[in-house]
Image (cartoon, rainbow, N blue to C red):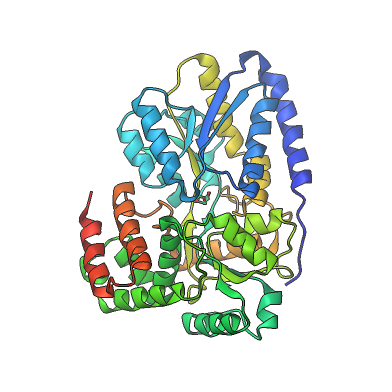
Length: 423
Ligand code: GAL
């Protein structure tokens, strides 16, 4: 696989140039825009900086409210308490079905005027445009399309262990065993419930297939949650744990990525925000690291779309700043600069991807192909498939099963079915 080294610096320069022109037309009405998010890893902060510089060049004040904690649970807790106490930020990183729940509370603002002026309906896949709308009105701006069902590996480490990049779960365990024999940590993992859940959903997709994934983890069908395929998924999921290290519990995802970067571990199962970290470390896809679909899931795509929900704010200057934020998010310049650093691909269609790396190009190709083939599924672990409370309940059962070796797959299945009914 040939490598094309994108230059975030050139992308950021393009952003600054665009922002400069925007500054000329709107300085008088500058306002403050506070954004609450959980993009705190190196590559994520770099990606968010693109938005900051666009808003600042327009004369607006960017107030960064970053809440550490991958997966976003802490950020959502903080956001809830701020909104309840009447101190909502201008924008918050809220995704998927949760947007409907927040909008139903009456706290989100319509940005339909921006969406119409910027023609979002013709620039977004309908499935994603609909996620951003409440009762037909846009209340959030989408930033990207992350793919979750990836496996990353260090080719040097694999080679030394005489192991190959696995295409299915049987091969995964053969490779993991070879890495273990070679004295390397086979799978870098961070023992946090959302990371456990991220692996679980890839096993479900890779072992059960798209229909099974949809029935179990989108439609939450009780018989499927309690069925023989789920038992196989849970058994395989538990077997993976044996190839992680004893220091995994509590580890942040980007530190796990760092282990593969440094060759301390051979592989990581994670969404392509991990790729952002490889790139930020100056690593080249195909040479220093390889990206492939999580075992057994080639041809399928679990999507996770980050979006900024717009909260109702007071004051013309704040409203103007918020609308400029929304417009900036969907601009081609930002879609390029943000996603080259973030590891995801632009959500805006028909973008020129020539500055993107080969893993991103593969993701874009697979995204289009899976949308065509009907194998595009929402990530349950990253808030795209079910309401937040149900996601949380299922996530906890999956993580308890991962951490408690005495829980049997049968017990976990009945708890999953119960969690799926929780609201
Ligand atoms: C996801 C989020 C990504 C990334 C990841 C790790 O839920 O959508 O943007 O931040 O968590 O924190």
